[in-house]
Amino acid sequence: MLTYPNIDPVAVSIGPLSIHWYGLMYLLGFTIAYYLMLARAKQPNSGWDKEQVSDLIFYGAMGVVLGGRFGYVIFYNFSKFLDDPLWLFAVWEGGMSFHGGLLGVIVACILFGRRYKKGFFTTIDFAAPVVPIGLLTGRLGNFIGGELWGRVSDAPWAMVFPKGGPLARHPSQLYEMFLEGLVLFIILWVYTSKPRPAMAASGVFMMGYGVFRFSVEFFREPDSHIGFDLLGWMTRGQILCVPMVLVGLYIFTKAHSSQQTLAGKK
Image 1 (cartoon, rainbow, N blue to C red):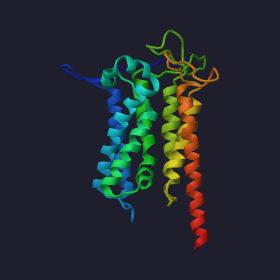
Image 2: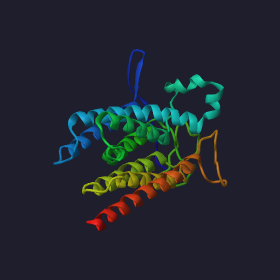
Image 3: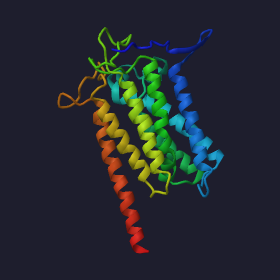
Image 4: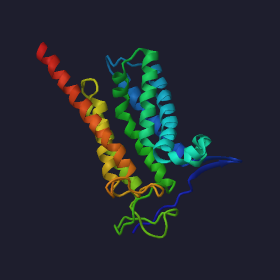
């Protein structure tokens, strides 16, 4: 069993103002994403400039925060929302959902595309390769905050989390950081290093995230107020990942079949 580092979730306190590591991880993720996107924008014939990248980061950040909070409330705590609708705005209590954040980013990309006259998949394909960076830093923030821990385990690397009871658990935040963050980033960055058909990068992201998240859910402790939703073993996160993988597979297949059709007409 490893010793959990037990880092203070508050990075800096200035009077009544407290800055949490989780928030700093979000900031770090958006900053790295900005410079990576800027590097891609500087490539010949990219069709992107610095102003557009900056605005896309802003739109994306709003989509992640607003969509993430809204998704958490609707997908994971809808009954509490019905009892107290104003709880939706109690962001200081925590609670973010990736799937909600994804929907928020989709809306943000639509709005961004309308402003700059860019197609939806032109925008989202450009952003997709850097999204895992935000997932990586976000899961690191979860680990530092000692939240979203894994199931009880006797693995040599299991840890006792301060808020997770006396038993050692999987550090599932680090599993997600590695798979949804680092591995998925490498896959997407390498895949998009060459020209790809529209929708393909988005399809790879959705399939990759869905498969990795579905897998890690077997090691992650289900939400205490939800438990297992389906068949006695499927969690809410796994259920939400199934349509994500199917949609990703569909648009990826459609992207490459359309490319082959166009090539055949030449």
